[in-house]
Image (cartoon, rainbow, N blue to C red; front, top):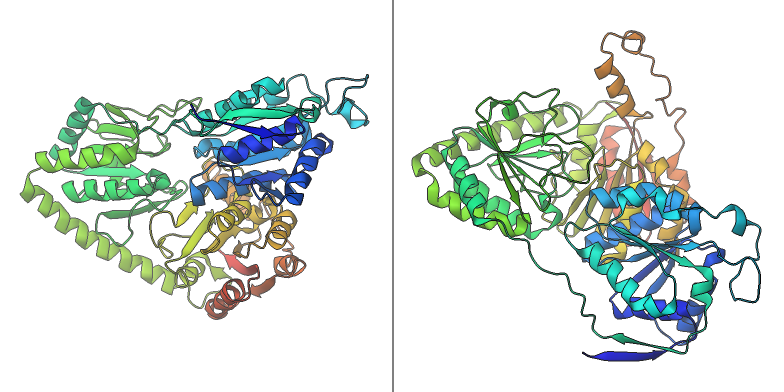
Length: 574
C-alpha cells in the first residue's frame, strides 16, 4: 500500500490535507467561531500557494449546500460544505433534503459547540453562544435525510472518518452525509499525518440487474399492445439517456416524462410522449396494458388515475421501492433493482429479440403521427400568447428556449415549460428536486457555473423560488467568486401552487367563488432587477411580450461578453 506523510500543525490542517488528497476541489463555508482553526489552516495554505481545496465564502447555508449540489451535477465529484454548529445546520436542512431526494452526494459538515467549559485546552468555550447553541443531539435535526452521521472524536481517526464519509456518500443510491467537528479537536496540535495515497476505499461498481427479471420485463413489454414508459430522473446519469432511447426504439415504446428533473429523452424523437406537470396526469397511463417506470418516484397519482385491471407494472431503479419514502404504495409486478445505465441496454436488446416487427412498425407510425400533432398543438398554444399581457408562461418559455445554445445548462425551479424550451442534450437540464425545498435554483446554478466555467448557465425560477433562494447571498456569491449566470424570474406575483391546491381541494369553495386567495399573493411585487444591480449585475424588467426576446439576448451578452451576472424580471400571468 502506498502512503504519504504530510507535516501539519493542527488537526484542522490535517483535515484539509486529506480532503485535497481525496480530490475535493471546493470547501463551501459560512463561518462561525467553530471555524477558527480551519480559517488559520486556509491562511497557511494561501501563504504557501496551495489552492485546493478552494475556500469559498457563501453568506447563507442554503445557498452553500445548493452550490455544492450544482458543482456535483457539473463534475460528478462531491464537495464539502461547512456551517456553524446547530444554527448553520438548521439553515441548511431544506437544501440537504433536496440533495437526499435527488441522490446527490455532499459531505456536509458543521462545527460543534466546544465540549469543555474551562481549563487550558485550546478551543474551549470562551463566548456566550457556546452554551446556548449546544444541542443534546445536533445531528438529530437532519438524521432522517442523510445516509450517515458521525462526530470526529480524535485525530487518530481522521483519515478513517473522512474516507467513511466519502464512501457512503458515493455508494448507490448516493446522498449527503453529515460530520460534526468539535472545536477542541480541530484546534489540537499535530506534527504530521501518514495516509493512504491514493485511498483504498473505492466504491465505483455498477449494479447490474437480475437476468431473469430482464427476461420477464422484456416479455411483458414485447407482448403489450399499449405499453408506456414513465420516467423522471433517468437522465441523472447522462449515459442512461442513450439506453432509454435504445429501448424505446427497440419496441416503439412511448416515453412520458413526469415532473422531469433531468434531460431524460430527446423531445424531437417520435417516441417522446410529452410531459406531465403537477396534477394533470395523462390519460394514457390508465389506458396502458404495460407500464415501465424508470427512476420515477411518483409515476401517477393513485387518487386520480386508475390502472387497467390487466396492466402489468415494472419498476426499474437502483432502489425501485424508494425505501427512504415513508409511504409509497404503487403496484409492482416486476422489480428491477439496478442502475438504469446498466439495465436499460440489456432490456433494449432483450425486447428487440422478443418483439413482433410488424406490430412495432405499426405502433411506430402511430407514434410519429401523434408526435407531430402534439408538437403542432404546443406551437399553437405558445403563439396564442404572443401578444398577451401579462406575459404567458408558454410564450416566456418559448422565448427562453430560442436563446438556448449547445453550451447552455438550464436550471429550472418550477416555472419553465419544457414543451417550448427543450434541453439541448443529456446533462444540460436540471429541474426542481421533488422534495420541493424552495430556493434550490439560484445556488445550484452558481455551483454548476463554478464546476463548468465555460458553459452558459441559466436559472429559470419563480418569484417565490427567487425569494427563498436568499438572493442577496446568491448574487453576492456570484460577484465574489466571479460566477456570471443569467437568472430569469417568471414573476406572477403569487404562490401559484397554493392557489391551484386550493381550487383542487375546494373547487366550489369561497376562494373559488370570490377569487380571493389569502396567504398566496406576493404583491406588491418588488423590482427584483434592482437587486442584481446592487451587485454590479445587469437587470431588466419586461412587461411587453414583444420585448422579451431582445431583453434575453441583452442579458446573455452581459453574461457571455461582459462577464457580469444578469437578471430578467418577466412579469407573467397564467
